Amino acid sequence: MLASTACLFAFCSEPRSQTQLVLPQRATTSLDGYTFENCFAYSSGHSHLQTLYHLSELSAVYGKSLQSIALRRPTQLQNNNSATALALSIDVSLSPVVPSNASTTFANNHGSNKMRVFAGTLNLPATPYNGGNPSPFEAPIPFSQSFPMSVGRNDASFVLDTVCTANSAGQTWYVDSVRIGAGFMQNELAEPSCSNSIGQPSLSIMVPDLDQPYVGGTFGISFLNLPTNVSSLGASRCALGAQGVGGSWGGLTLPIVLNQYIANSPPGCKWANDYLVDMPMQYSPTAGTLTLSPFAIPNDGALTGSEFVVQGICTDTVNTRLSLFPTSAWRCKLGSGARIPHSTVKRLADTTPPATSGTRYDSLAMIVRGFFP
Image 1: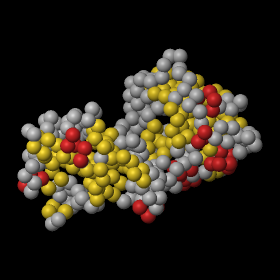
Image 2: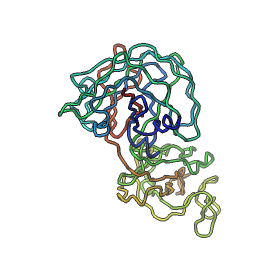
Image 3: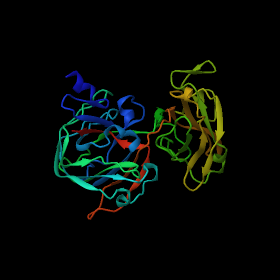
Image 4: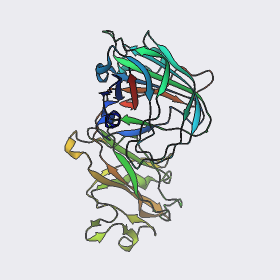
């Protein structure tokens, strides 16, 4: 039992000489970059997911044959997967395509030894959230024929290609995945009663990179739902602070009700950080947005886990007089920026017949456990 449990998290050999290997390797040692994949079994029942695993992480199984794979529900996503039956096909191959050079055309990424190893119905159970801990792998998906890992000198990746055409539950069955060591953003303060000159709060944001912020990457943000054609908004600033709600600024506990100290601030508006530095934002008078252009984050691993709070201060015009109007505030935590050598090409809500191409995502891979007798 102890040997079997250990095999959940690393390469190992059982008494029957069956080798098991978990990919990506980072999934055996760290929770850094854990994410979820919604393209294996999408709610609509139409999805195409192709992952290219760099062969540098499969050298231990060269010359062996892959007879089955197992998946697991996401570690971090706080949802419950519903039991479902999928109409699924799985193709595999060894390919000369380096994952970082993967084509968006699915067929172009396969090697000449492409093999269909599963076609039929896959039954998946209901799986609850496991409190942020890795869940057990599900029962292996048996292959109709074993795939030999006969790696040639020109091969660079192992390609795992799944196509789902029906999902009985009509709900996405999420699977565990690993991506770049990403940071996260969460709302620090949103005041629906803090209205700008068009009677709306600025609560929504848009970011250029969903993995931001991380060490060695960039950070940018756009604040939405602002008035259009108000020239004074061009003077707005984006402020970054080290403290947020519950912290302090100038001896005052955050958040601060602005109109208690600044007469020309609308009622109900609050300030939520300690304003260490600010930067200009670009105003779009047609879209009603304010954008902080992405700036570089130093590539210093010691910064991993550091947090900052960002909030916009806008020079809006209310009843022809200038007003200081804050946006919502967001807490940001820096990820490690660590990458994996694998890539994914995927397409959601596929067409019938299936589309031939998808979107490529570097440093993203579904977690799989392979069985090699």
